[in-house]
Image 1 (tube, rainbow, N blue to C red):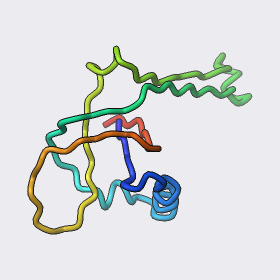
Image 2: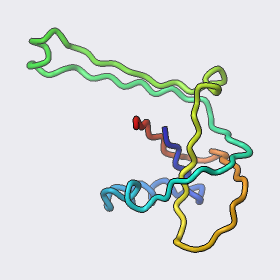
Image 3: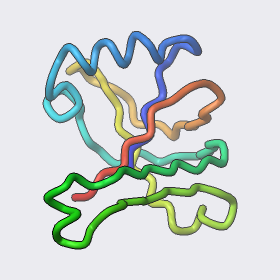
Length: 112
């Protein structure tokens, strides 16, 4: 799973605009590397998604799809943290970072 936190507290709209107008932005421009994380703080949340299947799927006996994701205190041990940094191609000093989601962020479920 990815957590994408804009620098600006009101930067979510601009981030959505950038992602939606530049297909492949995250896959093409993001450098993946392991980073030491000192604090990783996100709020508790639960996302529920459901939809009713089409007539074709109804014929197969599938009528309703529902899934949910819940992140809470008990789920912290199951969370694998991968921090993704968007950085210019320049020399940088490796340092421990804090990831504190104290303003709107994007959560993206991802399966490798």
